[in-house]
Amino acid sequence: MSNVLDLFDQTFFDFERAAGVTSLGQCVWVYNRAIDIDGLRRFHHHLQRGRLSRRIERSPLPFGRHRWVSPSDQSDLEIVATPRPREEFDAWLSEQASLPLDPEHGPGWHLAMLPFTDGGAGVSLVVSHCLLDGIGGCLAVVEAACGYDSATNWPAAASRPRLRAVREDVRQTARDIPGIGRAVVAAARFASRNRGRGGDAMPPISKPPTMRPAQPAEADERVTLSRATVFLDADEWNARAQSLGGTSNALLAGLAARLAQRVGRVTTDGSVSLAIPVNTREADDTRANAITNVDATVDPAPAATDLREIRAAIKQALMRQREVPDERWPLLPLVPLLPKRLARRLVGVATGGATSVVSSNIGAAPAAANRPDGTDADYVAVNSLYSGLTKATMHRTGGVLALLSGSVQGRVFVSALAYQPGRPNSNDDLRQHVSGVLSEFSLTATTGWSRPDPVGGAAVSGPTISDRVYAIAHQANSPEPHDPTA
Image (tube, rainbow, N blue to C red; front, side, top):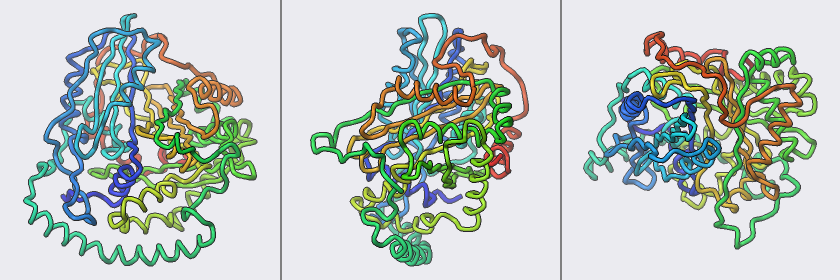
């Protein structure tokens, strides 16, 4: 098996390095009782030997492809000694998200547990997006919870003598030359179609009216994105989607569209540009980011009463994407050749611009995803995060608005992440906006990490790990649930 990075994974890594930003995923579990520490240690042990047990090693060539290698050290399990009130859990999660993670030098992920003063406990797993995407992370969690270790053995870090590494990477570049040639032709056509627009090759349709250039004093000022997570009953969620003529994915897209309207992240005609990740992961897939993106422009106005228009728009976008693939993908072979300065300028192209809104549905995860200590947690949610963002970056890319959703054992979580230049960007503001949108859709949600009736507590037997892994990998290529029209 080749350990050369997929071109999209290399692009993701190079663009992060150019922008000085780290994209993260954070999986969160909450127990309303004491956690099984030994079970959590076993979970951590298997994470160390699973899909997360790798890091990126740069090519010695400035234009070479990077490679996957085994880490020389592993992230330790952090168990906080002093309990904290449950009300401080969100602050602790932010602290965990701000820990330095590095997919190149390590550690690329971190698992920690915080005991609550009321007897419960919270668990956080933060992972660099350069190591795994949402479905890949779900696989890693399920496998570790079931005691499964990865069968992939990556070469040891720095195991190639420099001369051998140079020879191998030169040969790899030679194999990439046909793709590079096609990329040059595609880039020329791309530039020709977008000539006269100015600035980046793919500017947003319009900028939010309150957006302004970052002032020199603000250029390096770090920003914290606002976050909000809510939980809903899965039966209620699915019933509401069906009653509106939509599906779970269309309902999430409708929420994203109405939320975008509330915060002013719309085009000049009031439409919303949705960016919907579609998973392409296969069995035994070693890519970190096995996704493609589908872009759909929707009218947010009727979303709360009728999802049929949004569902149709997403379906048409899916069909269009299959017939006419994203014109940015053929350009990927050029990324290893780009100087850092140019890569930094292209970050805005990759992120979609100032009116793009991400609507990402992980789908229904296996029950094992909710068992980091071997027993059922009361809450589980996944958040998207960015570390190292500055005001200058946010003004250059036009901010961010993303909704991420999934379901486990009869409960749906919806996580929102936002930053809009020139507007209030507090967690309270975002929670109010999310709450208002849910009310528009007549949906009842639980916010925060309160103490409902426990979901469970006993270890549960079920299908073998091979069944679970196959099911997730298979779902990635089936119409349901990862097809956004499902």
